[in-house]
Image (cartoon, rainbow, N blue to C red):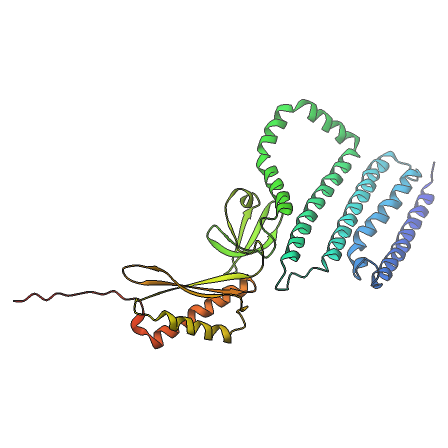
Length: 346
């Protein structure tokens, strides 16, 4: 039987060992992080110091329990699950941090800020969704392992599984939509109907894909609002993706004028405007009369830009300048309603 002074000395030695081993491990990780040849980033030591400390403390506590230092059974019963949970928590935490570091390391070669970023956005989308899936699985496994480490909870779990079959079926039906949403997120990762920074029209709103998770997608609307829709939306509902195959876009501007407007002059003015703006990528420019009604004529202008934000700015620029051009040079060609008054002879 172990005496109390021996227990005190062991606790003191354990604390000293914990601090020394932690500072040694922290120093080694910090040293490794400074070497550019290693995969670990420079701030790796700062990112893992909390789970590292928990891991070392739980490990020392586990060794003490196996050495039967604690003489009272209730103390053993309290500290045993604490050490087990500490090891599981710290190991899970370290694995998730390492996973994120590996992902960021692999994505360094892909730059989504370039104009031709289609491949980079594909890779970013796949890695982000797969990261969420793997982290979700790791957390579920960690919770399962933690529960299975307790004999009482394990027996309760077995009894619940054997006696609640009908309840399980009901819960399964209730969770069907949630499971379908998760599967939709996985399907998006592989089939990629959308990618990060894609320009889309969803529910009549035009914006960019800002975030893709396992269960929902965040769309940044042009006026800085956020539209959040479930992942299943992009599997079950038609939507417009303007950058599915490439980042460049055709921007459309519609003008409504009187029949007297000289369309060739509008073409000349468009050429002049495009030459003075850096928003145009010099790929496409078209002026066409696409419709005519009893009141006005519809003129469609197509211009191209390197990406969706630039295309939006280019459309606004062309629309404003052409309206000013018509007001200054051909005010009589703006849309008007004609009324004919027949004066009766008296």
